[in-house]
Image 1 (tube, rainbow, N blue to C red):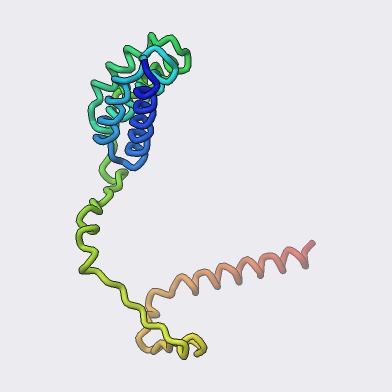
Image 2: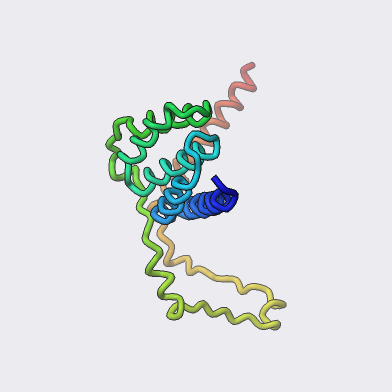
Length: 174
């Protein structure tokens, strides 16, 4: 294997890792597959490329490809690679648990937002005069405040009064 193909493999490997870390899993798979075709698979670097490739397969939704690659890597000559492959395969073959929908948080697709940048503008109007002024106080009309739900305050005050009375009584009787 010549030096040029090794450097190309390292470059593709780095590109695949960066794509994976940025959530571009298909791009990561493409780069890592190309890097994998250029390296000697039984070397430490070859095992590292294949572990990343298996992880990219899993992230891209290609679970069976990831499990199959880990099955091959369990017999890899590098002990770290084979151990990691066993652990990953164990996790990926584990049964999926059903989670209630209320446990999950949906993350909105922000792709539509980036195409709308020219329509969204935030305007701030700060002048040197407003920075030196004190903030204005906001007054609340007390006639509009709901006082019907304030029974808790009375219950709490009565509870505190009873507790204090009991403590005073204990102090005099001790």
